[in-house]
Amino acid sequence: MSNTDSDLPAKGDVLVDDADPSFSYFPAEAWTTRSQQPWIHSAGTFHLTRSKSAQITFTFNGTRVWLYGDKNVDHRYFRATVDNGMETVLSTYGDTWTSKQLLYTSPELKPGPHVLFATNLAADSAFGVDYIMYRPISLELTPGSTGIVAPTSKTKTLSTCAESAMHQARRTGESHWQLIVTTVFSFMGVLCAASALLFLWSRRRRSRAASLHPLPLPLPPAHPGDEVRIAKLGLVKGTGKGE
Image 1 (tube, rainbow, N blue to C red):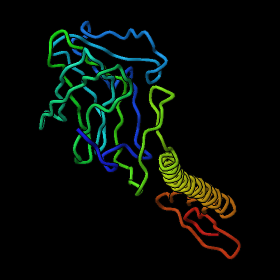
Image 2: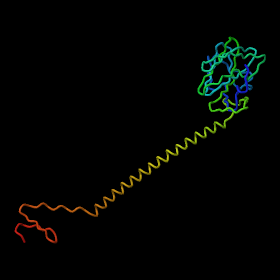
Image 3: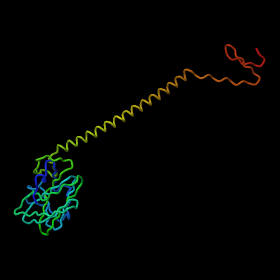
Image 4: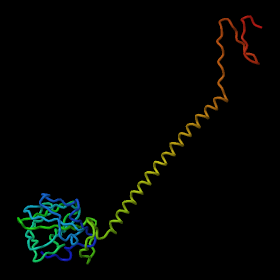
C-alpha cells in the first residue's frame, strides 16, 4: 500500500510509544516485550505476538492515526480498523528484517475520540508493534511539512509551540476570570463593612441624642379632692382649702 505525502504524518502529529497506557494488548500473555536489539525501537520498547487473533487497541482523540512496526520473513497478515468500521487487511512480510515501518494509515476521521484495532490473522506468524502516530484535533497542516522524526521518548509531540500557546491562553483566561471573581468578592466585603460601620454610627448618634435631651418625668397622679395649681415658678399641689 503506497502513501502520498499528504497521507504521511506531518509536523505537529503526536508520537505514542507501544508501552504507553493508551495501548491495550489482548490476550496479555500472547504478547512479549523482549527484543534482541531494543535500541532500534522507539524508546527501546517493542511488542510482538505469534498468536492468531492476538489484538491491540489504541485510544486517541484526533482525526488520523498511523501504526508502525517491523517487517520480516516470518510475518504475515493483520487486520486494522478504526471504531470497528471499514476493515483493511495488510501484510508485514519482508525479505529482510526492518524496523519502524509504516504498517497502516487510517482514512480521514471526524474530530473526536477514536479506537484503533489491529489483529494478527495467521497462526505461528509474527506481528510486531513499535509505536503509533496520530493527528490531534488542534493541528493545522502546513503545505510541504511531511516526514517522520525519530522518537526519543515514550510519548513525544513533534511540535509543541501550538500546544504551549493554547495552554498559555487557557491559563490567561482562567487568571482573568479569577481576577474578576476576586474583585467582586472584595467589593462586596468592603460594602458589608461600610454598612456595618454606618449602622453602628447611627445607633451611637441616637443614643447620644437621647442622653442630651431626656424625656420629662410624668406628673404624680392627683388624689380626689386635691387642687392642682399652675404657678409661674412651677407646680403646686393644693390641699383643697387654698392658700
